[in-house]
Each structure stands twice: as structure tokens, then as C-alpha cells.
Length: 346
Image (tube, rainbow, N blue to C red; front, top):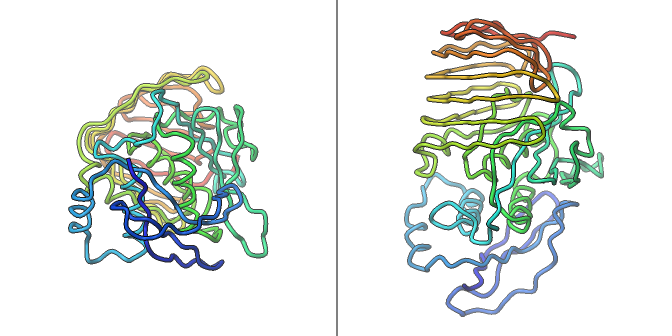
């Protein structure tokens, strides 16, 4: 296994950082490296170890779309180097860890703070300087994140074999692409959603609308080769047990509060015993939805969702698609072929 350095300079609003050094063939001088501190947002050179052959790298480069920006190429190439051809971390551990999404109401039901827990560690956006609005990532441990996200118990969204070291590298890459906090685009929900997709290797379940963020998972779900095929997981943690099967894909595109979503072939069975209580079986053949966060929206499709109880901060009841819910995500009225959602002040 050899060191791979990426040559070039990436510019951010807070200066430049270099990613350069000794190439895989042993040619070239290694650049001096500065430590990486992703907890306070400092960006420095990345050194990755990989057993990917140079011929494979050449093949990857030859497949680059001419429509990609230099920044996007750098990002995709670095992530690809972290992962082997089976989509697993080359530095991963043997033990899977449960991944949970935690939310904290800021202004019900219009705004929530999001955080992701991997194992016992929470990762969330914080800001130490509201003058520059520089993004930083806070790490904490426990049932609830430092911010209070997870007060609804947290929702099991998948499992991960990524190590803390790989997570640290990914978070640095994310911060380099999203250096400044923006309420409508580069915020806690953008980090949480994109981190969830990556750390679970695209094998996740999340049924929430985005309050406001700039996210697009349509390519990874329906275009990229790794996004195709049957996926699923079974996991349980602290009173929340989930079995999820993804046959067709679950893509979302959001710009600020505007959400567009397509779900194909989704099945989820869930038992909740605190916080919350209930049993739910959600079956979606197809569902297309459009919404302005939790303010207002609609969806059309075909589903047979059935269940009753309290979960994720909502009270809900459905029988073969007919029913609704009210709570942290507003109010919804649903049928087997569609439904509507709107803001509800509780």
C-alpha cells in the first residue's frame, strides 16, 4: 500500500491549501503537511493510503465527465480513493456501527437542527465565529448531541463500517467545499444528509423533508453505478428497531426550502419503544413529492403504509395508505395515491 497525494491547490474564502506530494510511483518530493483539525474547520493537505492500482486510477480519470468542475473532480477523486472497488473503506474496521439522525426543533415545525450519530459519537455543524460564519464541526458523545439534537430519541437510518480516521478525512473534504455557513444552503441539514449518505455507503433510510439546504442525491441514487441495485439493513438501538429494503432508489433535490423527491420500491418495518411508542410498516411502490420545507407540499404515488403510534416527534396513524400525522413535521393527510402536508403550530 502506497501514499497517494493529490497535486494542486484548492482555494477557499479563507485562503488556499495545498494537496500535493510524493506520487504513487515514488517520483516527486513530498510536500510539508500541516495537521488537519476538522473540529475547528482548518483545512490542510490530505494524505491517503490506497491499494488501488495506477491502471485503475487511469481508467477512472478517463471516465470523468467534461461537465464536471475542477472542484467536483477533486472531490469525487478523493472520495473514490478512500473507497475500494466494492464501496468499502480500505481502512475500515470489522465492526459495524449504528448510524442515527437526531433533530432538535428550533421553530416548530418550520426549522430543525440536524446531527448524525455514528456509534456513540455525534457530528454536527457549529460556528465559533458568527462574524465570518465559518463552518465548523462539533463532535460529542452520549444519547443526545451537544446541541440537543436527538431529543426525539434519534432515528436509526443505517449502519457504517467507516473508521473515525476515514470520517475525519471526509469531514475535512466537506468543510473545504462548504467553508461558510449559509442558512439556506450550507448548513447543518446539508452536512447531516450528505454525511449520512456517505457514511452508510448509500444504504440508508430517511423520510424527512429538508427545511432548507442545497442537496442533490439524484445522481448517486439513479445514475451512478454504485447507486443501483438492491440495498437494505436491519438495526436496533435504544428502543428503535428498523428493517429497511431499498429496491429502486430514494433521491432528493433541494434548493433552500424547495424540495423535490422520488422514491421507488421502499419497504420499512419499524418498532419504537421509547422515546415514542408504536409499530409501523411502510411500503412505497412509487412516490413523487414537492414541498416548501414543512410549510406546504404534496405527493403522488402508490403506497400501503400501515401503523400507529408516536415516532420522530410525530403522532401518526395509517391503514393501507389512509391516515395522517401531526407533530414536528407539521400536519399530513395521506391516501394510498398521494397526500398533502402543511405547517401546524403546536
